[in-house]
Length: 306
Image 1 (cartoon, rainbow, N blue to C red):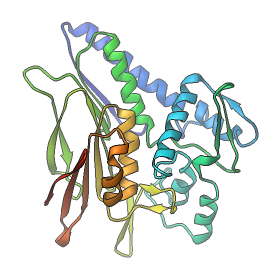
Image 2 (image 1 turned 180 degrees about the vertical axis):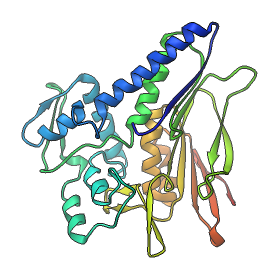
Image 3 (image 1 turned 45 degrees about the horizontal axis):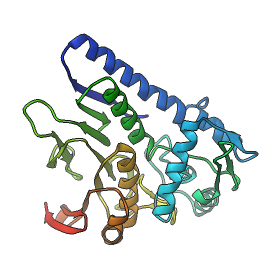
Image 4 (image 1 turned 90 degrees about the horizontal axis):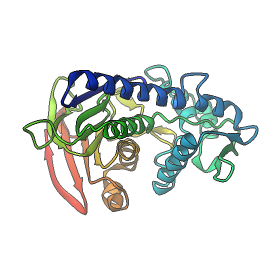
């Protein structure tokens, strides 16, 4: 999934733990083989090639996951959209570090997106694309789903203390490490990679982060990041990064994109409608600094500048 998964576990015996961790990493590989947008033989890639011509049968797991993705799309009025792939390609973020598309390229890409055109048949477990050129890109949520699957496997094997990280973008803290109330996670300073902004503590909770520093390019003094607003077809301006605390990695992975795209003002108004318990906005401030806006249900509780 274009990142390194790490799993830290505590238990009674080293050998069984090693096998459990290997099985957990195998589960990550299984999810990658199922949902990869980059592997041409994955069920998702096969679906993308065929669903524009006819309804395509998919596994129960993939169907249910796509239904969950569309639920986030509807709830966010399209701020989260798994059909955003053509936009990522037009802006050069699919396999590269970005480029400025022409007006024609942007118009063509926008004509090929829209979650409303993904037709799911619950009885037959089929998927059909009602819009020519549509394709699914699960990169904005599949990492969190894989984290949740790993956590479920660890629980089934009797593990009560573990930290599961998908490259730092989605992290789940199961229980707590010995002699600690939770897992300490340092949030990265969005402007200085070598610094941390502050720490959060996880206990049976997920942290998901989306940052403009992950992939971006600069043109004429302006930064364009990989975080797209599917409704405008353009990268989201005015946000450095967003971090979300939630009950699951899937929810957090979707919601860090939702809140990033919606922006601070609207996120403040709609936070109560989503499952996130807390949201951290890092936005640009004067003199090359950043400002923190921290949202917690039901209202904004603190703010600061660095």
